[in-house]
Image (cartoon, rainbow over all chains, first blue to last red):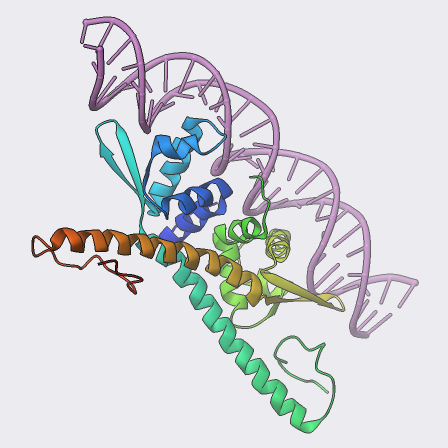
Length: 126
Length: 126
DNA sequence: TAGATATATAACCAGATGGTTAAACAATCG
DNA sequence: CGATTGTTTAACCATCTGGTTATATATCTA
């Protein structure tokens, strides 16, 4: 995958179930890398890599203090992902509204069942 | 990746920039597989696979009519992803609020600003 | 029926991903 | 200092991913 925007990194990071579980834990309280690792059946270096991926996406912030690394979530990155989703949904709902307007108008002319028509008709050549 | 929930499929699907761009197009209007393919520099079989991934995640619904396949977004699947994100954010904000409550209590002794509160305060235990 | 069109499938490939173990590094402890 | 602890890095490996081209399938059209 050719990542180019931060959104790519964020969605990529969230695509892995283990990383999403890490996020779910961090959302409750910040944890050290070791504490995270203790909760998963995979090796500590594997967790280390997941933490790095989350960090590079901006979702996780690491604060080193002595030899322990404290991990915290960044609300800002999280927002970037949910904003993208929300925007898609908003457009999508607008389109749904247009469809429903269209169906209402169409229904004024006939009682044809409109079930099979799933999208806005483009042109009618007959 | 060992996918187990539909959320896995959805986030996996959205992790690819090309697939997110397909979603962005579909959000405006439904398209046939060919119309989607025409907008990307990659081969038609590659698009076909992306469409399949989106379909399996539930994000995309395909309606075959003759030899063309019409693709539409499913709001429901989209919601699953944004709900997950929203829930994380909500918990995260709760945590922020706890922190902020703590700071406020600590500030009973000083004049600390409360800028760190980003969202609705949920409860105030003082 | 033959050809064109829309899409899917098969076979393949380079590179990425997610895991492993072993070793290195850094900080604290005795 | 040496030992221990928390973490990263290196090297490696099997599998997955996203692309390709070639071919198959299904439908429409002349």
